[in-house]
Image (cartoon, rainbow, N blue to C red; front, side):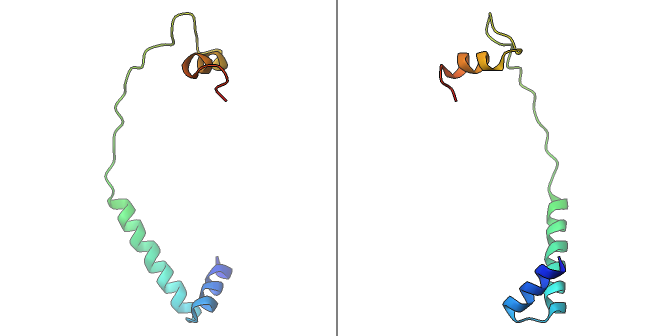
Length: 72
């Protein structure tokens, strides 16, 4: 991390300490934004089982039934 900050200091011509403080401020501000995000919930949807004659044990067969031959 120090090497990346030093490279940024060289690239921008700013003192290392300034670059470190700027990136710390950005990181802390971003954490506040992320923390403020609300939780979300997923709603379950019953998709039913596979078509008659098919089962979940043979995925290739299910893909072929759903997408046709040569589904790759």
